[in-house]
Every structure is written in C-alpha cells, then in structure tokens.
Amino acid sequence: MNTRTKNILYIIIPIILAVWLLGYEFIWRFDSKLDLLRSIPIITHSGVKRTLYIHQQSNSSVDTIRRVFSEVKNGKTFCSLWLDGSTDTLHTEATGRYFSEFRPVRLATDTSVQVILIPNTEHGLPTGWGEMVYLTPNDSLHVIQLINSNIADLNNDGRLELYDRTQQSWAKLDLLTRQWVAVPVKTLQQ
Picture 1 (cartoon, rainbow, N blue to C red):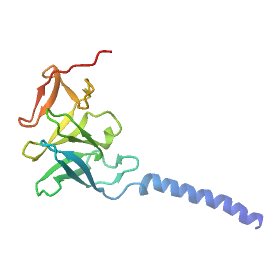
Picture 2 (tube, helix red, strand yellow; picture 1 turned 180 degrees about the vertical axis):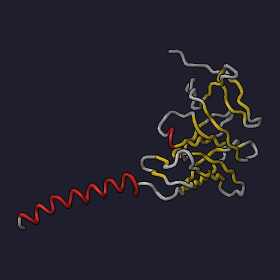
Picture 3 (cartoon, one colour; picture 1 turned 90 degrees about the vertical axis):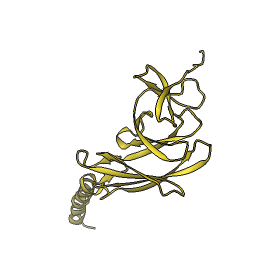
Picture 4 (cartoon, rainbow, N blue to C red; picture 1 turned 30 degrees about the vertical axis):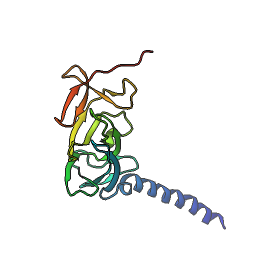
C-alpha cells in the first residue's frame, strides 16, 4: 500500500466513524414507535397466581436502552392491561414517558400481590412513583396512581407499608373499599 492510499484511509475511516456515531446519537438510536408486551405474575385475594399482561404503544419514538422518550412534552404512551383468560381490559396512559419497570409489591391489607408500573423517568429509584395495578376481591383489575416516597417494610414481614400524610400514619390498601387504611406497625428493636 502506498503512502497516498494510507493517508486517504487515515482521513476517510475517522470521518465514516464520526458520521456513524453522530447519526446514531441524533437519528438512529430512537425506535420509530414503542410497542412492548410484558407479562408479570400477580397473586389474587384468594392466593391464586395469575398473569398480568401489559401492552404499551406510543405515538413518539423511544430509546429503550437509555430509557429516553424523544418527545417529553407531546409524546404519549397508551397502556392496556389484562389478566390471562380474561376479556376485561384496563387502559391508562403516560405523557412524555413509558413504563420501563414492573415491580411486584405487597401493599394491601391481605396477602395479595400488586404490581407497580414504574415510568422510565423513575427507573432504578425506590418504589413510590407510578401506577399501581391491583385486583379486588372479585378479581377485577384496578389502577391507582401512587406518588409517595415513604414506602418501606418497617416490621420486616415481607409486606410494605405506605406513610399516608393525610392520616399521619402508616397505611395499607384495603382492596374491598379501595381506600388506604391505617395499620399498626411493630418495628423491630435494634
């Protein structure tokens, strides 16, 4: 290989690499539309294990590797939720984000398991922000918005408690009334 060819390659290869990196960073890294289907186990009021399906579609492009929504102001994600073997479907939506994490939790007064849909903007942070999906005693799906940074397992029993500022006490969700009810919490002595 002569020196002229080497010099041309030394110039062309970095230019091609720079164009690819810049193109990926600003154009190609966003998927044209979000279309995700996830399934997660959920436990009913009577202790039966079911599968919850979560299907998300957006009207804006998304980078799911970096968990970035391209249009934070106008982009919407439409989310459908249903149980295995059921035709009952719930719909919820998020503006400027999508649900990137699904956490099973026990926040109810009984032994059932609920699922918190965590938005990409809160991914990796402690449980406390998102939409909580739960089953009523007659196994119908419901969703409530959860915005609370004070969620903990104070008595180390494997079930979480939420600090309700309106009641000034720790509370759990009563699935029958769909209200947060105060519960006594015995903390372990150090």
